[in-house]
Image (cartoon, rainbow, N blue to C red; front, side, top):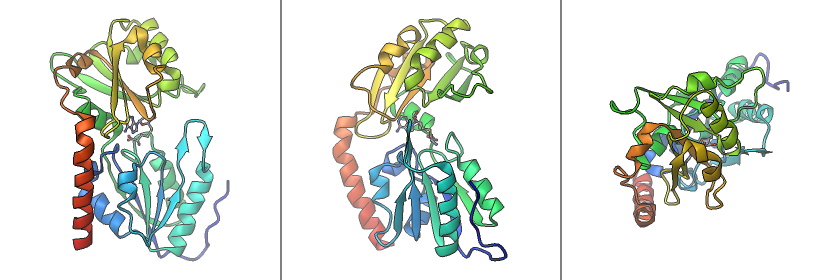
Length: 277
Ligand code: SAH
């Protein structure tokens, strides 16, 4: 799709590519919060939590451009065009993405479009789903006794030109975090076990991490597909594969149910703080 810009003219607006974190409104950075409060237009993804959307000033234009597996509410080309158009018609344009914009968020692609159109931008990092999930599910991603490293991969597995490196991911000293992997759980477990990772490797699937509806599904790599097919499992969900998952019981501090009330109170406090700004 060809971009419509205004050749010879400079956009007056600027775009802030902002990470909204994994869900819990308090995981938003102060910088993201300040920028959101000054926004004239916000283009946001399906993954951005309602609590965070509620922080957007009422006079700002809110545009949902989210994509959900298989269901595209706006094609990437349209999002790129919208960003450029808004930068010409508005001053402070926020592109708000779940988690961190540079981790499986296509943030880089959107910025390349802005560069091509000569539009000024800044990037605000966010807490990526892996970090949020790890913290709130009580599963450290590295631990001297269990894992020396961690790898983030996408479970989309759909690019024939870029086949999954199962051999590389099967290293038993490493934790593997799989984004967008639920629909391909059987391909992922077969790939890893086929490359030598033990079927007994502990795994966790965590859905709606960091929110009051967080749920953990814990088992073994050999039963990943059954865990992923649990009717109670909601999206979004992340997989953590590796020995570190053994710590999930002893380090399980987060209780989504009792947190629900606390979160409601935090939201009231934030609203009060926002009014005082
Ligand atoms: N940029 C985002 C990731 C976008 S890809 C980030 O840095 O977090 C979308 C995938 O992220 C989902 O399919 C899911 O695997 C994961 N995800 C995002 N938010 C999540 C949450 N609250 N709980 C569990 N998984 C989440």
